[in-house]
Amino acid sequence: MSLWWSLTDHPKFEGASLDQQWDVVIVGGGFSGLWTAHHLLSHDSHLKIAVIEQSTVGSGASGRNGGWASALYPIDDAKMLKHFSQEIIDSLHHQLRSSIDEIGAFASKEKIDCDFHKGGSLVVARNGGQLERLKNSLEEGSTFLDAQETQSRIRMNGALGSSFTPDCAAINPATLIVGLAMSLERRGVSIVENTRAEFSKDGKVYVGDKRIKAKAVVRAIEAYHANSREQLPIYSLMVATEPLPDHIFEEIGIHNRETFAEGAHLVTYAQRTAENRLAIGGRGAPYIWGSRRRDSNELVKDIHEQLRIMSRTWFPALREFEFTHAWGGAVAVTRDWAAYVRFDGSYGELGGYAGDGVTLSYLAAAAMADLVTQKETIRTALPFAQWRSPLWEREPLRWLGVNAAIKLSGASDVEERITQRPSVLMKLLAPITGQ
Ligand SMILES: Cc1cc2nc3c(=O)[nH]c(=O)nc-3n(C[C@H](O)[C@H](O)[C@H](O)COP(=O)(O)OP(=O)(O)OC[C@H]3O[C@@H](n4cnc5c(N)ncnc54)[C@H](O)[C@@H]3O)c2cc1C
Image (cartoon, rainbow, N blue to C red; front, side, top):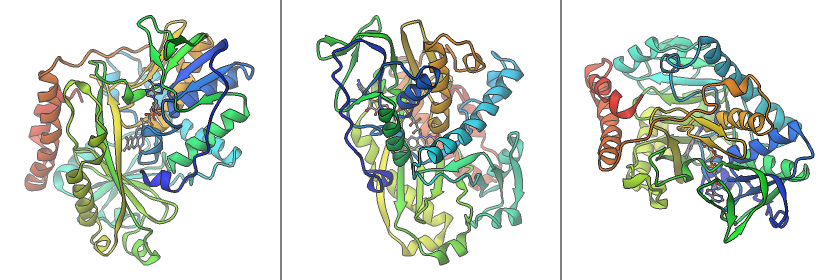
């Protein structure tokens, strides 16, 4: 169980009988599905909306993530510029930034105690290679902090510098999603848990052999859309410490609950929780042949152990403390790392957030609601709107390429530690990873 669920009560959502005519049926009770319902209601509060969830609300990535409500977008601007104007790209970044504040305002208005705190985010360089890459890839709104300035925010072992952006909030995602679901239920949305839906080829929704009647249906199942060349489920794993005493934070900093990561190639991310634990995550679990999902991949012992070792390397003081939680989940990665929000007049789908979905799902869902209600807005012109990525390679190429990329990302980090220069290996890997 994720740390977040151990701290959050989960009320039952039983919903109404699905055997009636709906305006919109949404499959998937994660952030994408629930925010879609939320934004649809802000267009028309009388819409009859059902959300069908195969397990419980937030049981997917939405209730298990690192709790970074960031303004990150998985592809860099240079790649987007091949297809979109600078104005559209700027608008995407602007809207991601304001979405963080909108999520915070929603939580505050609905009195959802999800520990939302916008303390910004740090990426720390611990060797010369990371430092050079960090300086060369500073995004608008981010500031470079030298070693001394970094120390005033975080005292990570071996830190040479960092980048800081104010645009990130730390949250408990499980509490936010339960609060969102309760708010939707109060506003008349029917949330039906423990019910698996299937899609026919022409985009109709079935539960068992019964077709659910709806004017529009939305597939909001993100990394659960597996066994396909459209996207890969890539596993991200997390560990969390017991609550740490105040003197530890006097030693390691993070006084403003900044989220933080090491600027390594193999993704890492962490937050200081409201109850003074550290929750730390990273990638590295293997990709499964055929883009399959497998629950055992959420609990790869070696990766969890590597995360604990990494945490203690960052902060040697953690050696005295226990790690009480270990969990994981899948993120969906398309071939070009682009997110998508598509709607054809009766069937829609959204996802492909590549591990940046907490804020992005809010904005993507707003675009989906615009498309469903046939509103042309600034959001329906954003890069993810009606975007279709190329397909991933067929097997065995996909298995070989993705697993090699995962392994070689780790090797590139070792290369940078040894050479103190940006990895050459990683440059060679770019065509395989698509990044
Ligand atoms: C360990 C981890 C850490 C992460 N950290 C961060 C982070 O710090 N910041 C960030 O921005 N992003 C992070 N992410 C990514 C982020 O959590 C996701 O992008 C986001 O939650 C996706 O939301 P979603 O609603 O699209 O998908 P999900 O939350 O996965 O929801 C999909 C839902 O669909 C349901 N479903 C699937 N198939 C069916 C079916 N046939 N019928 C009915 N229901 C179905 C599932 O049960 C699930 O509840 C992380 C992800 C993981 C796994």
